[in-house]
Amino acid sequence: MADRYLSFTATAPGRFLTARLGLPQPAALSRWTAERPSLDGRLLHLTAGGPSGLDLAPVLARTGLPTATEAAGTTTGSTGGSATGSTGPAAGSTGPAAGSTGPATGSTGPAGSTGPAAVVLDATGVRDVDALAEVHAALHPVVRSVAASGRVVVLGAPLDARDHHQAAVQQALEGFVRSLGKEIGRGRTVNLVRLTDASAAESTLRFLLSPRSAYVSGQVIGVAAEGPDGPVDWDLPLTGRTALVTGAARGIGEAVAETLARYGAHVVVLDVPQAAEDARRVAARLGGSALTLDITAADAGERIAAELPDGLDVLIHNAGITRDRRLVNMPAERWSSVLDVNLASVLRTTDALLAKGALRAGGRIVATASIAGLAGNAGQTNYGASKAGVAGLVRSLAPRALAEHGVTVNAVAPGFIETRMTAAVPLFIREAGRRMNSLAQGGLPVDVAETTAWLAHPASGAVNGQVVRVCGQSLLGA
Ligand code: NAI
Image 1 (cartoon, rainbow, N blue to C red):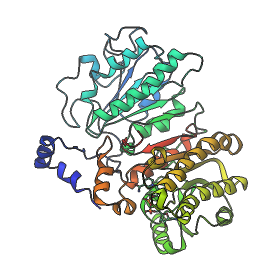
Image 2 (cartoon, rainbow, N blue to C red; image 1 turned 90 degrees about the horizontal axis):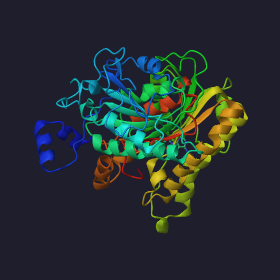
Image 3 (cartoon, protein in one colour; image 1 turned 30 degrees about the vertical axis):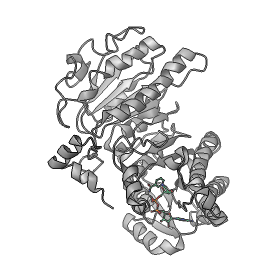
Image 4 (cartoon, rainbow, N blue to C red; image 1 turned 45 degrees about the horizontal axis):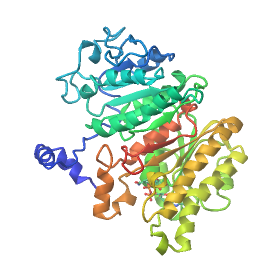
């Protein structure tokens, strides 16, 4: 079901009318295409809180965006009057940094104007409230000039359990990022990455600083210190790898299969016997194979392992169902069917495949939660329970799966995504779902797929136990 409001607001009369009426004005998002694989413009690298211990410059240079690095010139403890980086021209830059030539006034034009396409603010050195003022000072002059569909990525440090001042201001960055995400507009996103090692976070920074992350905003992503083992093919990272996607005959699962195949994986398209024809069609199109199997079967894990005697590298738990009813009207069958598909089968197949050693070292498991699971939703006690359960599974299993099997475990939590599932939602609720997020529109299956592909990336080994929302920063449980 096309989003007609989004098309209308892309026209001049639509823009005029919706502005006059104070209605949401969604910007058309720039997504990845083969012709336009990266953001269109330069990257501004700022620092707050004094010099950082991160070796960021080479990692940012490899994003392919021309980078203007502003010197971390201010002292920690400044009162915020002097923005970090406003002390001089960009070192080694391809042009002056926006903030170094004075506030970016007048550069409020569309993409392609003088503003940067992306801003990375390294705030890992912020340890007290005075230093936090440098976050304001660094971003205040440049935020307005960031191009449409541009990116702001703030880098933070892990919270220090022995220093409550550091923990307070590092946690403050979350409120800052989430608030800025809600006000920045024009299809721009704002995210926070907590890290201690820049190269371990390279796949994450590349993802967030690209059009692939168009519908990911207001997120806090933790990245551990281990870097990727061995060289990485950034163009075809999944070459030679086998990925199994459950529920891949249509919808989000089909987009995930397509994206993983585009990254070079051999994809196994798993779906129920009733969807066998669609599963075979998708598999044939992607040069993969189809496996018809009800994932709730008690021996589903064993059958997958038997089908893939050489093992697999990427396991995507995408299959899911809804059977909505308020709890007072919900028969036990609606409860158990949803819990069985969305949670019990995820637990069972994961356990079986790990126990059999079917997931090769360097493997990736990505499960599908939902913002309804994280925030709760009327009529979805069964679905909400199942999807919150997925988040619990991920957080508990991730450290052990990495230690014992060399496999990471993460989840994506989609918000309102334009699929057959959401097309069936009554009009008024559908419109509310689409608009109640910072980007004022629904996401596309490819947005979930790209996020899944980042988590499945061989260079994402330091991303583990994360539940990343793909929801345009939905107001639901934000
Ligand atoms: P969909 O209904 O279009 O596709 C789900 C697929 O899973 C279908 O092909 C179906 O045949 C398959 N499936 C269902 N039960 C199965 C079983 N027992 N064994 C094997 N395959 C089975 O759903 P959609 O929208 O593509 O959702 C995919 C995932 O994303 C689900 O887990 C859903 O809960 C989740 N999600 C979707 C959102 C949305 O806005 N569409 C929002 C949040 C989460």
